Length: 78
Image (cartoon, rainbow, N blue to C red):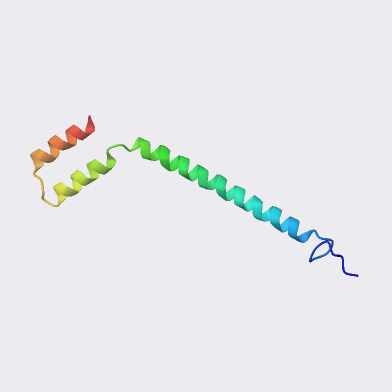
């Protein structure tokens, strides 16, 4: 006869499926947390990298001269 504990077998399918889904959720959250921590740590190390890249782009485009580029690059490296 039909056992009314669940849809499949003795009612073990849905609890096991939920256990698996929750395990995947926790693993995903752990990986996401590690990625966020690594990105924050890496972002703190590269201070001024954006400013130097912008300065190099301006120099490459001819917006500033060599002397101004060298002076500003020296200012950013301090």
